[in-house]
Amino acid sequence: MTCLFKYRLPVVASAAEAMHEKAVSIGAWAVALGLPTHVGVLLPVAGGPLAQRILTEGTKELTGGYFILEPDPESAAEKLLEAINERRAGLGLRLSAGSHAAFSHAHAV
View 1 (cartoon, rainbow, N blue to C red):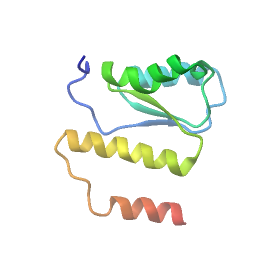
View 2 (cartoon, rainbow, N blue to C red):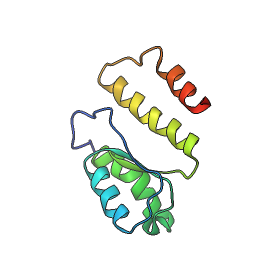
View 3 (cartoon, rainbow, N blue to C red):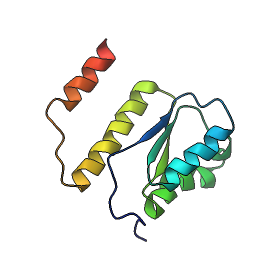
């Protein structure tokens, strides 16, 4: 199966501290749009292995979007940056030389 969206823009979404039930629907909307979407707390719908696999892998094939379930902020930032760089590469865009340095510096402050 191929992704419905021909162009995957280097854009991601994040709800690091989703504290309301509507965060699930907003996150699902972002995934349906084709965005890798980080959630810092486990979603109540991600309890079973099948549901978690569909949310984190299955939707990527269909829309290009998927959930990144990661409570650790630094690990989440790395995964989001990986998703952006993957999409930049898919569009033929290079990662600028200062991107990793700027990212590392921001976390060191």
